[in-house]
Amino acid sequence: MVKYKYMKFRQELFWDVDPKTIDKKKHSQYIIERILEMGRKEEIKWLLENFDKKTIKETLMKRRGFTAKTANFWRLFFNIPKDKILCLSKQYRQMQKSHWPY
Image 1 (cartoon, rainbow, N blue to C red):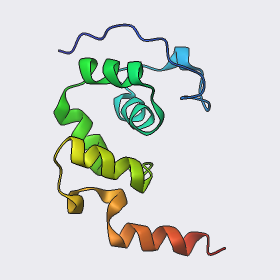
Image 2 (image 1 turned 90 degrees about the vertical axis):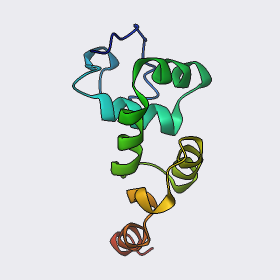
Image 3 (image 1 turned 90 degrees about the horizontal axis):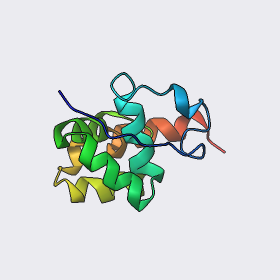
Image 4 (image 1 turned 180 degrees about the horizontal axis):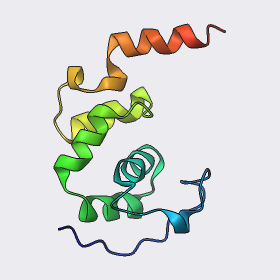
């Protein structure tokens, strides 16, 4: 069981919800994605202290909300092969372009 240290989430990270309503267990992938993508140094530190590396890596590999720049940085940090990151796959990138061709 992971014991979480309290972290007051910035509204800028979670603009689409009330940060006070975020449940760290229930919304772990959501929290991890937002902090990896837009977190500040202290938020990254909190994330690494409060979530195990396996959970963070799985989130990075499965979630599609990462920019290529962010996904590449974290895959290098965690030593994950590029072909294991969904948002970096060629098929995913082509699919993204077909939705909004402008």
